[in-house]
Figure 1 (cartoon, rainbow, N blue to C red):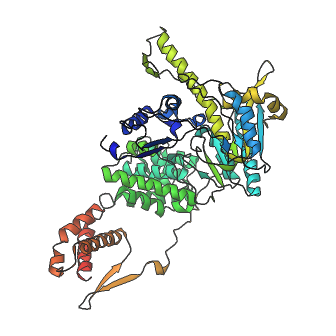
Figure 2 (cartoon, rainbow, N blue to C red; figure 1 turned 90 degrees about the horizontal axis):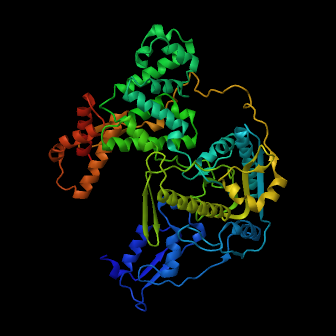
Figure 3 (cartoon, helix red, strand yellow; figure 1 turned 90 degrees about the vertical axis):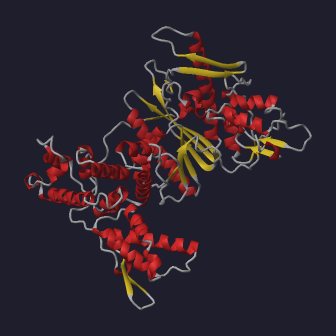
Amino acid sequence: LAIDAQVRHLLVDEFQDTSRRQLELLARLTAGWEEGDGRTLFVVGDPMQSIYRFRQAEVALFLRARRHGVGTVRLTPLTLTANFRSDPAVVGWVNNHLGPLFPEQEDEVAGAVAYCPSTAVRAAAGGEVRLLPLLAHPGEAVAAERSEAARVVALVAAARERGEGCAILVRARSHLVAILLALHRAGRPYQAREVLPLGERPVVLDLVALTRALLSPWDRTAWLAALHAPFCGLDPSALLRLVEGAEEVTIPSLLAQEERLALLAPEAATRAARLAAVLAQAEGEVGRRPLAQRVEGAWVALGGPATVGPGELAAARAYLRLVRALEAEGPVSVAEVERRLARLFAPPDPAADGTLAVMTIHKAKGLEFDTVIVPGLGRPPRPSDYPLLRWLHLPEGPLLAARPRGDRPDPIYDYVGMLEREQEAQEERRLLYVAATRARRRLYLLGTVEARADGAVRPPGRSLLDLLWPQIADQALAQVEEVEGDRPEEGGTATVWRLAATFRIPAPAPSLTPAVAVRSAAGEGVPFRWVGEAARHMGTVVHAALAHLAEVGGEGWDAARVATLGPALRAALAAAGVGGTELEAAAARAAAALAAT
């Protein structure tokens, strides 16, 4: 590489999660280095924390580099064992219970790493590690999740009372469904780090329904979702009466029929007519306002912001930013909105004070917390699939095998699969180690064990609790508690959240809509009433034009020369969504404002 001669010192952190391409880059950067030439390569990593196989990280590369170096550069290993983070009680438990899970010898092919015990540096300060297993009988899976979630909420409350920061760490996001619901019901705000998909937030689902409804009058699902959303609030029985017997008619057409609305209760008819009027107005602005503005305007006009809290407002803004970004690329399609939305996560709740974090174990890497709660240890991962190709990098070279046809076995394909499963099993030990070592003072491990038909009590196979079971079985069985019997939600009936039928958007305070006059040298006023979308876009265009004049120099820009900017002003306003009769008037006002400045 051209820059290798300029590199004198290289520091690589988290080296245990290096991929082959990254290692090749390091080898090229250090090619030609010689011992004693003053250049240094310093790599830092803990192979017991290598947990990113799904990102092509290979712990074998760390083990190989420690033995043979990187490229032509030999490394001098230095092992650090002092633990400055955790209470001695946590360090001792990890050494005694997780250490035996690791193999005694390293194995590059199997991705096996030997355990290196730590020595606590901190003085003891009341630290603890507790196992909180739940015994679930057949058919109690839902009840077990609720019971575990209730325990998590209680542990969070206790940490809060002690004034300690707390983190809930899970193996997979799907393990958080019952826990997040329980936290919400308990009024415990939390900071979620890439946990909640943006597209699953209720406010975003409502905005997606509005977007789809504005894009197509034939999208019955979207129109029905919008009618059912909190800003409208039709219940299922009203929706059924509205559409029954009219499967071939669009929802907007049905809403325009007085006889159809007469089938609804008076309040439901009022709600439906209000939504129809708002969306009809938004539909009439096609070509004059961008889609994102029409969606946001309809949502605000319907009172959507009044139905959500600060966290949902942040999610709504994130969704509208996505729609604006898609519009900048070209026409917006529902498929592309949903595809891009699936890759986004909801922003953190602004109401959370940072004392409670929720994330996956992978996202917790490098972080530490006073109290760490690890639920869901009894839940097994998804079954392994059978990919079309399997490959493995062995010391002798790569090994590639294609999936055999039909039921015919292939020993090479099966051998590579066996090695991959072994590598996965070894990484699961390291995943459990990473979760446990995030704790400074307290570590709580929660999981479900099953009562088998033969009377035995064990965790589900392939779960992290099953992996840990040989070390903790006696202690866990002495502390196991029965799952509370499954029961319906309190109240017995669903609660419908919606705006009152009489809701009206509050008028802005007078001070928020001032009339501003810009005086020209001749003393003539150029009035600006900052109301309406056209005026707002005109202000944006004028501001951009003034910034441009300041950049190129304002000398010589008299009224005649400013008039030459007319076509550019009209183009900028049209691009912002101003059209029709408003376009010429807005362009004229923008030119007058520039001439008077």
